[in-house]
Image (cartoon, rainbow, N blue to C red; front, side, top):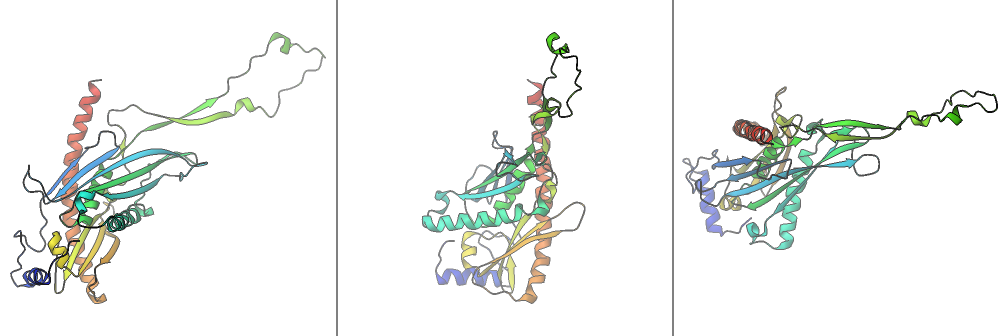
Length: 334
């Protein structure tokens, strides 16, 4: 967060509280800046995305920008750190160039705060994909999600979760087939077939050659590089309510964040088979919020989150069509 003078802070607050609220870029209180989203930006990742909020024109710079990438690694459940059914691990890093105004210790704390919230929300059991298992009790996928903030022009939390959701939506889990190695059946030599002593012993009741010696898996070669994460429509979106009673507003710039006494983070998921779910909420800032006001803010937040969710869903489905067509063409050209 940047520092501003008392006069700047007062001017911004009064502009937002006025009957005809005024923001420096002319937006309304519930308006977002332009969002640019692209998936599949990292060819070596299992899923990736780039999100820019507030970019100045198609070729311009600025705005809050983040990239997210998902990498799937095989873990051993029996002797390693693996968990039966797979697990999710998240990490957020910040480019020093985006936060040149704060010390390295403060940057480490900021990265820790971002990482903690992202990991706690996305690794919750209610969101866990069911297709991260490979071999029951033996092998499973570790889903590592890394988000990097390249620039920060305000509203970083919302951008982090937008980028994370897009990368997870884009993720393809490789299709696997379990394979089993069995010992070759022994063949008796003529000498072994002879009964020298005249006593014919029956076969042993404990024949280790009939048991599999190892169990493993192999990857299937398919045009689509795998299957989407199960339940990918459940990944949540984040809405940050910037509260300066009696008003609240969305998508704050850096100056507006510096003038805002309280921010309420609301994370909603919208499963297709049920109503919306509030996955998490967090208060930031020195301001105070009465308990009686929380319900109203949650209701408003759900409305804003659904609008954002629907817009992202539409864009991600368009990206799916583009990516699938590209994958089919590449596979056919082999």
